[in-house]
Length: 93
Image (cartoon, rainbow, N blue to C red; front, side, top):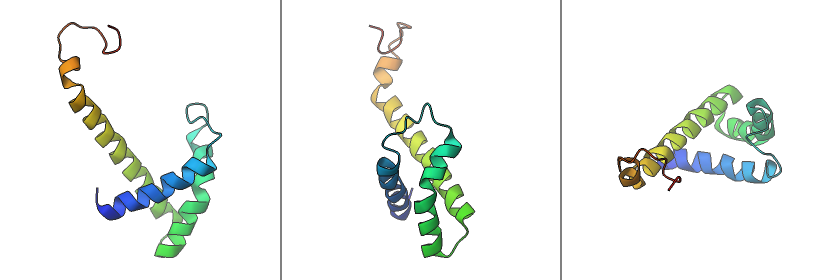
C-alpha cells in the first residue's frame, strides 16, 4: 500500500468515525454503511475527476488490503500462541 493509498483510506476512515459513530457495523448492512460514506466518496471523486464508482472500488480494495495486512500482523504477533500445539484457542487458557 502506497503512502497515497494510506492517505486516501485515512481520509475516508476519519470521515467514517464521525459519520458512523452511532452505527454498529455488525448490525447495519454494508449498503447502509456505504450510503453514510457517499458524501466523502463523492467529494474525492469530484476532486480527482473520476466516477464515484472508481472511488468506491478503490476504497473497497484498500479496505480489504488493510484488513489482510492487519490479520497477517496479528498472526505474526501471536504465532507462538497459535502454534503452541495444545489445541486450545488463544484466549481459552
